[in-house]
Amino acid sequence: DSHLERQRIHHNGGISGFLSVLAYYPDETLTISVLTNFGNQPPGPLANDLAAIMFGEPYELPTQAKAIEVDPALYEKYVGTYQLLPEMQVTMRIEEGQLVGQATGQDAFILYPSSETAFFAKIVDVTVTFSLADNGTVEGFTLRQLGEELFAPRVDE
Image 1: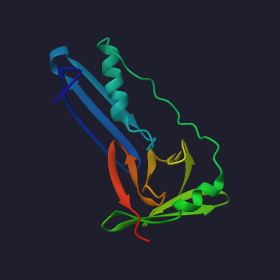
Image 2: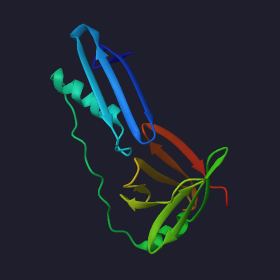
Image 3: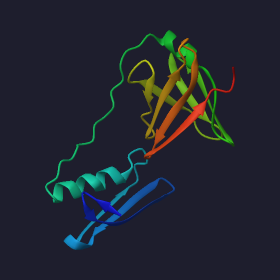
């Protein structure tokens, strides 16, 4: 494929909490390797930014998402069950004044608000953006993780 209008050969992978990416730009004889055991930050964007730095192209420094203050009563409308995959549902609930998500067979995670409809997790690279109908009811949410996007419709109403 190509990146920054240059030929690139790359591969990424991961296992047991480790993630990696290897990118080779043959025309420039440049190889970039990024390895991490910090599973909530995918290495691909970092490798792309490192290539941009090497080629004198624009790049963005990683930023830490910041939670905003919202009325915890807002979370009530998000409580429910959502169908993420055919064999995986995500339940949203409130625990100790925080919105908590839990996928089938996985650990629960706290969601922190970045707006009244957008949330992020701190322990994994996950963002959740709720979709509201015109009448204000929750239709579902879009989950973004490791560069992938999935829509999870609400199934409990």
